[in-house]
Image (cartoon, rainbow, N blue to C red; front, side, top):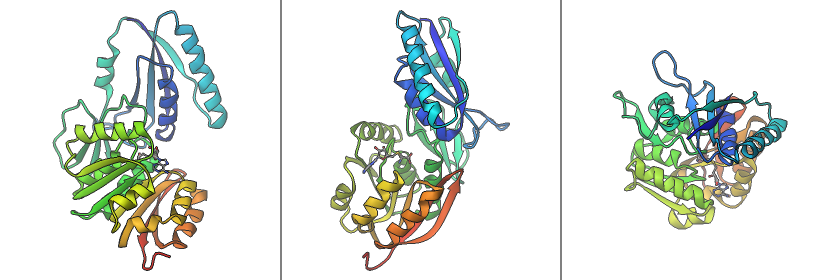
Length: 301
Ligand code: SAH
């Protein structure tokens, strides 16, 4: 089989929307590659190379046009570098691409790994994900902020809620860091399936349950509130959730880590939380993104 390979080099923040867009037109699949440093490991702040493979058949021109149009539209919202197109003749790219991946170290203790690599020695705790999937691969700054805050806040034995679990990356990290019970909740059926697959891949099923739903599902499954709640969603969703009793999903004195928040949205989310039983403790920053660490107060208000 011959292919047309489409390549763009973008920041971690942009890699997921670009990969999502390409995935819609690339039956050959989309891969995210991170560039390795001298030690042979990728770092989360380096650029990501997104590659997509279009089969060289009678639909190639239509697909290429659709990709170019999609990139043009995305480029109206946020500046994108030009895509390059390269014919790949009869190559088993699925094998060559695998050779290019490197583990991505996050925070002090975690390592995001393509599922097929042998787990390297060393102290870092591996999170195995399939980078062929277009979302939830750990490249977004908000995911990295949540992982860093989780490392600081989680105590072994904690009960954790991961609201908006996506690929399940934060739930898997919580289980690796010693949580005794993790509830991974997402409103989207595809995300629930992806999370379930990744949880199995990481063999953490005994600690992590996956449910489709949202805040009411959390309140039903964990009535006393979790020791630690993670929600990496969007600022306005978080504000609405704060008013709808997000604090009650956290036990007295427990911690909420909220992200998906841009710098200029952070104060509004803090205000909504403080009006409803969560007290701001600190913020973490990466690029324009923020994560908030808050503590449940009594009474929740
Ligand atoms: N936790 C992952 C994924 C974040 S993407 C990470 O940190 O990388 C945000 C996820 O929130 C998406 O999977 C989306 O389906 C989910 N989501 C959006 N609104 C939601 C809501 N109201 N309730 C539950 N999940 C929601």
